[in-house]
Length: 209
Length: 205
Image (cartoon, rainbow over the protein chains, first blue to last red):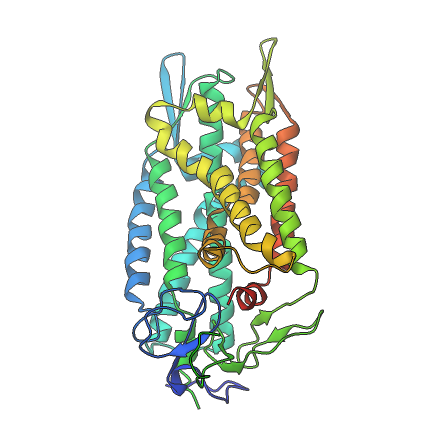
């Protein structure tokens, strides 16, 4: 199961009976519950379990379904209501010729969330010993996932801004649909999933020396 | 420092990405400590980084107050022109959408402000060579943990998308507060680059 990586020699904290504090970096004896320097909580076994990652991830994936089925924005004009979903809103933008903006919305609301679900699942399986990959590559993927997840919030801001403009009387009636809270929570839960993942598990596959 | 005899882990650092065990060393100005195992940057100690982060946190706190009060957007529709500040928007969004408004307000104003105040509280004594303020470690941990939820830069993209969506319905102009938010996003980028957690943790130890 061990993947060969260059320059992986040298002791790890865990193989020396220490736990590294993820917040401040101090190496503390295994068994300590809080870091002696910053007071941050330390996991009892030295690593954060992937159980929390799976839990946040499933919550995020489940909420992503209604987020795409329900309308994100409801426009009412002359007594008739027009509801558009996330993808529908992007198609409206394409119809109006705003291709660049449509691409931003589609990437932020569809491509990033779905890629992120897949990447987190892949990372969790990898650290359980399914599949092989260079630890450097896996760490890079984790860093990209952690960095990019927040950008999915764009559509939530768009809906909130439009709703605020309507409330202040700038626009005709337009209101947030049922999808908005589901989508916001889906993004928040997947951000929590990425943060719950312990990147040291990637390197534990190699063992310490 | 804690009165006990030096234990074997004193001065040892574990890489937060790959768990490599390293000796904690003081980096010279301009030097970076890079993990030999996973190549993560561990320390980017620069002599000016603390004052730089402090100044950017003070700027953020001041600009954020101004950005709340100044007009963010002005729309003219049907011969009527109106200005709106972010606080007007927060007051206006009532009814069923209030949880959404609260979440957005937290991500674009309350959390960035809380982070800026926490950093000012932590870094002011350090920058003038005093002992850390009481509770400084908890405040610094809070500032780090809140970073992903501070979404000023993402909000700006949302504003642009929203303006394109309403472009046909009303003519829209951006107010001073929008450009303050652009400045806030740039300051946040600078702060991310200048803030070296490990250097500050060592000073808080």
